[in-house]
Each structure stands twice: as structure tokens, then as C-alpha cells.
Length: 341
Image (tube, rainbow, N blue to C red):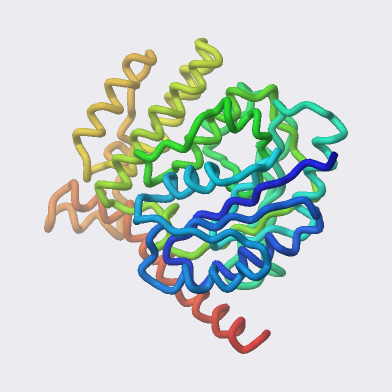
């Protein structure tokens, strides 16, 4: 018997991209599949576009806007697959992505082995995707995978995974409290229930970088910061669940350092909680941006606007400049895409 693969697509205001995602699901050369789209109360034409594919056997349903995790949980409640393929509405799967991973899964015959794959960033044209390997692009034990993620701040895009129903059931539902990094937290739970992560080379997912408006972009909204802080705590809980040791504490401290600047100076309450958690791990947070010297471009601001503003500007303005340049690049690529180049 060939396993059934459920391709589950949560969608919110993805009118511009949902068609590409569904087409890539339909083009999978693995024949035994079902495709389920859950529209999370979109305010644009996402539901209308997705509904045009019902004639191709795609199941399309909608719900009141409740967040990506709720949409994913709804999609899973409707599926019957032996394996689960999560696919965000703006991403694309290579035609043989699932078939490569299923072939590997059938060869090893271990439903508790979690399958990952290659992924590359693109904007409009998948042929321009950049596949840049990280320390996670290899076979790893659960603890080694999580230690690398926390220490090196590397990650895998949700579409990379192929998850057996056994592992999906063991991990539990997506955490609907999270609006940011919900996938990071979810797959931590999947990993700790697995017997290891197998990296299937040649299986590819295309991750669309849609810019600052995407759910995964980092901004200073309270909703995202609170979600990020909850996700950080849950990440640390996962790795300590697997192993309580000096190396896991060290990895957790590194993870806290990595994300500390997201909340500084906007959420002093979260900063205080992070410092308390660091102390419980046997370390402390170093506020590096208050230690490093001000560069000459920003030093004059200290006398005019104060020390905190000067350091804020030194940290944020380069990022704003990068965003402006990136917007120009995206405009040019979008124009070429629309012209058929």
C-alpha cells in the first residue's frame, strides 16, 4: 500500500501567491495525495482564488480569522494522510519533493524518523532561489538538532518537513497562543518525540521572502514580541526536556542573547524576565549595545537626543537602510516577473 500524503495549506490574505502554492501541490509526482486549504478569514480574494481549484479535487474551507496555528489545526482535523506535508500559502514545493521523502521513508520503515529537506529563498521566480546549506542540513539526533538551532540561530522552513501521522499525533496540536515563530515551537515538539531527523538531499522547498509584511518578519508590535518571548521559553523547555546538562543550559543562554535585542528597549518587562531566566540557567545577559562604543556616525546624537536614542539609532538605522534597498530590488524583480522574464 502506498501511503497517503496530506498537503495542508493555511492561508491568510495570500491572494497573490495562493495559486502558485496550490499548483505546486497538484504537480507533485507522488500520486497518493490530498490537498486541503483553510482560509483564515482573509480580507482579500484568497478564498475565491483557492476555490477555483476545487474542480481539481482540492478541499477548500474557511474559518473566522483565528491565526495561522488555528488554521493548521483545522486543516489537520480534516485530513486522512499517513504523512503530513505543511505548506504555507506563499511557498512552493519542487515537483519531486514529496516523492523523494516518501521513497526514503518507505526504505527505512520507521514512522518515528522525521524527514527534512533543502530549502531556498526566492521572491517571484523559483529559478532564482538560493539554496544555502546550514548546520541543520544533515542527519541529526533530536538533541543535536535542537542544540544547533539554539546555539547557531539556524532553522528549517515549515515546508521542508514530511511528518508521519504517528509523530504528528505524539507532538500535539499547533500552539494557538503563538502568532510569531509558531512553526519553530511546533517542530521542536515534533523533534523531541522523534527518533532523529533524516535529511533527504534533492528534495526541495521554495521559501518566498515576501518582505516586512509577512508573519515571520520581526517588528516591534507587542503581539509579535509577546509571541516571540513565549516561543523562546518553550524552545528552552523542549531542549531541557531532552537533556538537563551544562551544554543545554549554555545553548539556552546563547539563544537568549540572540533574541535579547528584539525586545530592547521596547519591552523592559520582557527584558527583566529574560535576565531572570538567564540567572536560573547560571548565567547573565550582557547588554552588548550599551557596552560597544558609538560609531562616529551616531556619536553626535548622544549630546542632542541622549545615550539611549543614540544606541537605538546605531542598531536600527542600518536595518532600515537595508530594507529600503531590498524594496527597490523587489520592485525590479516583480516588474521583470510581470513582464515574463
